Length: 289
Image (cartoon, rainbow, N blue to C red; front, top):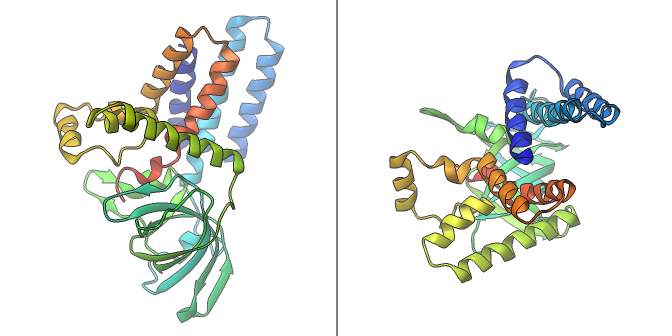
């Protein structure tokens, strides 16, 4: 139940970040202050928990803010929609999402080059790239990607631009030539976590039949690419697609599992931290790529 409350205040914080005019550093300062007050009132359980709940609220608000960017030459989104071939160099920073005809890669961009305009510049920011599914892409790969850089589109009833923006992705390269120039360029701890995610996914596929295996991977690990279109349509018709998507539902599952195992609160938080990376490593690309 405690983890469920923390998850709910995180979501409330995202809403607060969208509507309240505070900068990221202000939210982080409030989170630090709440942590200090939680320490000061640690003997008073009610006050301590009130301040502890403020921490994910403030962090959730700060997490939302990166989706609102100011385009400037130092950010890759500045070069969207130029309608010229653009080459970017970057590192794969999310678990590659293998689809039927391509693999979706999230790149943390280091450099952009536009020969037609004489531009070569060090930049930052993330882009979503469609690469060949015939290559075994991995988290931490260092790559060159060449193609047209676009702003994620707005669609009827759904803002794909805002959806990706909430993941820190503001540029899209829907058709790209991608080649690997190196590997192991990212966080080694996250590499271990993503490898664990892959092993768990393979174990689920080995232990359960379809479509149950893909559905379970979608709910527990966020790997929704294996769920058949017919099954997704059935969930859409019954209005239960949120069971697959909502992180709070997954966190409630974790809370029940941890509670049934009689684990300590600190151990539960550690499990939640690891589980967050297991299920959210490619959430920004799963809706539509």
